[in-house]
Image (cartoon, rainbow, N blue to C red; front, side, top):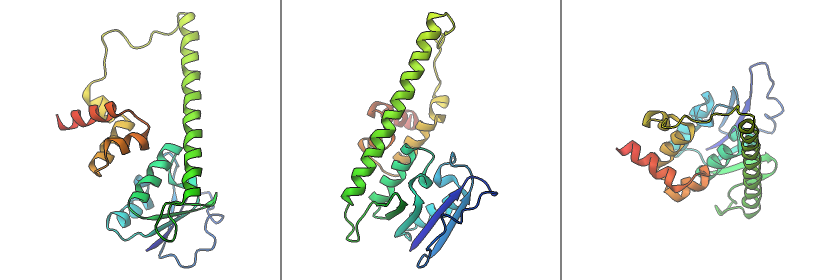
Length: 200
C-alpha cells in the first residue's frame, strides 16, 4: 500500500502545494494541525500508524522532510523506525529515500540524514552553550539560584518527561538500548533508569 502524507499548521492554510502528482497512491492523508504534535498523535498520523502496525504500508511519500516531525530528532526517529520495518520513505524536497527499489539502504540519503543529524546536534549544543552562558551571567549577578539543595524529581515526574515517554515507547516496540540511544541521543544509563522505574 502506498500513502502520501501532508500537513499544514492550520485549517486556514492551503496544502495544495504539497498535494501534486498524486496518481498511484492508495491513500492521501492530510493533517491540519501544529507540527509540535508528534506524528503518531496527529489525527491522520494515527491512521498512518495503524497501517504500519497492521503491516499494510509499503511506501510513505511526503513533500518535505519536516512533515515527519517537529524537530530533527523526531524526524530521525520516524525515519529509523520505518527503515527497520522495511517501509520505504520517499521525500520530494529534498529528494531523499531511505530504501532503494531492491530494499537496500540508500547510501546517499543515509549520508544526507547523517549530515542533518549532525547539524541538529550542533544546533542543540549551541542552544545549550547559550543557556549555560546565561546561567553564568545570572550567577555572577546573583540572580540564579538553580535547583534547591536536597530537592529532586520524583519517579512520576521523571517518567512524565517527554524523553522518558519516548524511551518507554521504543522499549515497548522492542528496540535495543543501543538503538534507542542513537535515535533519541540519550545515554544508555538514562534508558536503564527509565526501564528500572517502569519495571520497579
